[in-house]
Length: 159
Image 1 (tube, rainbow, N blue to C red):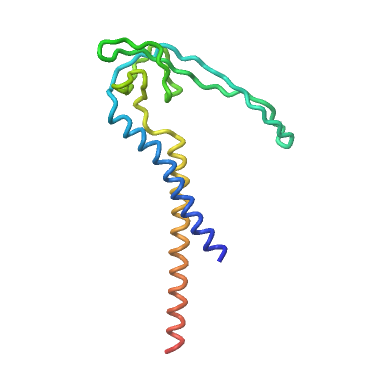
Image 2 (image 1 turned 30 degrees about the vertical axis):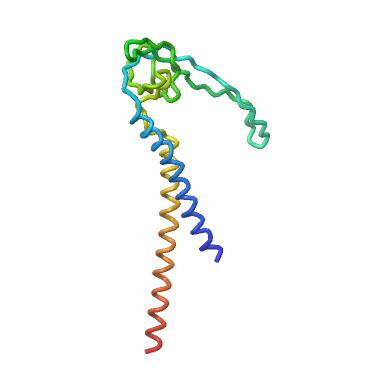
């Protein structure tokens, strides 16, 4: 009984992970349909750091710094120049002076997104969700195969 519950929970968790993976991809696709493609120039890449304090004495890990870039771009939209607009999504390989394609909201041109639509975290959730669903379905099919085999043996004994 516990094994069947675990199988069904893995399938449900896998479906949840697939929804988590697909949601940002879908949102990104829908948002970009209403946005206008614009060429922009990366004007500034500022590296920001933050600290975490992990006082786990078991592993001997102390505080460490995390770094991520803040990327700013400039572009023209309908003849108006927009300067130093911060990107919400970016690649770690961007550099100042680089020409990139962005998508601009025509109703509020300071809202921009990059052409990058697939994010690694979404791919990770997609992969894990697929594995859990595959495991659950495989176990259900194996259980049905075993039970079919048992019923066939019972029928042979009855003859």
